Image 1 (cartoon, rainbow, N blue to C red):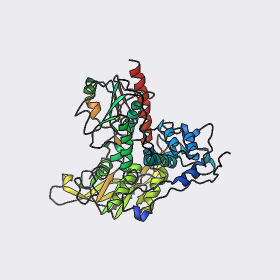
Image 2 (cartoon, one colour):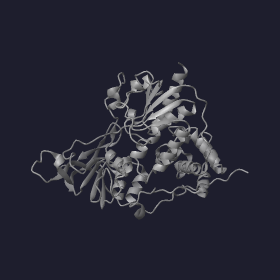
Image 3 (cartoon, rainbow, N blue to C red):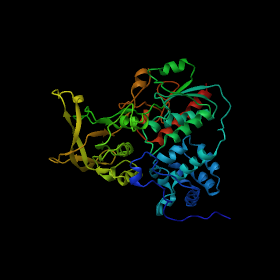
Image 4 (cartoon, helix red, strand yellow):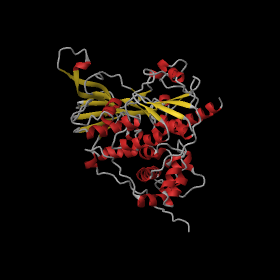
Length: 474
């Protein structure tokens, strides 16, 4: 008998902590589907033969196939389908922008809400992590060695895909913990560190070696990796260089880049009562920016004890680049959005006579200017235009700049023959991830600048395939 179809126009709701409760803890906000909800949501999938959802996935997960396994109650089988394409399913199920990718192409979305593909992927991955003890399957060692620089999503994906094929892979990570942006950039309440660790442990079980506290470009250079016997190198070092606006007051005490603010909280545990690397707690906080990182920083500030948190963004809600779910959660938690607002100066209090050095002062406010939307820019977004005479002061004692990041210049500065673009991104062949230096491949934010986890994973897969072809042809 054919399985019934759930024709409800709406997804099964995702269970979550109540806003007033979660705003003061770091526990995961969304608690996930149970088996009944997962089965009911899976039954909303029509199993389209054309599979438009797959073409919307940067790593081409066989979505109808894994959902069909859920319908059968074969949750481990569903995991095995996903893991053929994705090395980080528990991560992707939580942080991927499915609404603009796979779910955006779901046929059910034409007359209602699309199938909750991300929610189902998360359910399957969590079920596997809770129930499975089977060792991962890899091919026999092939004798080739590959070095991967960076243990973020692109590096871990590249490492996993190569390990499956029998390569001896070593991942070199600059920090003391593997995971890259997954551990230092994404807060616990959105992506628990235990989830990332399980994914890392899975790769280690496949034979991937991890070397932490290894800053490639300082501890070792790319050329030295080749001298050590590695036959190819993948650079997935991310975009860890924060951007600032260049306005007065950015050197005052109490001004952070989102990178620093989140790293101190997520990785260095600044939320403890006796932190080694503290951040400003309490008071009023302005987070400048409108992306997912801005939402993460604002919601983290709230959980660190801020009495008031503002999102300051120069465009309107329609142009806000953050995921709709993250914006909704931030609003539910009481974060105030100051839209069509642009900072022009950070104001400081100075406790000494030397006002020439901003480092002697502390933040007491942020001077802003109201904006209106003008003509569209080259990407089609209407340009924000300042309204003369509209300046006002926002009373805050902490400012977090979440306006993007750039690729770290360290590797390019220490690697001869590696070409980069004007923004510092490593130049690669799009189809292979190959750089201008023989045997060196790159992907993720080190190439594109700050982007999504899943797009970085897609780049890691592309490079792994190209590395395999390159070494097999030698």
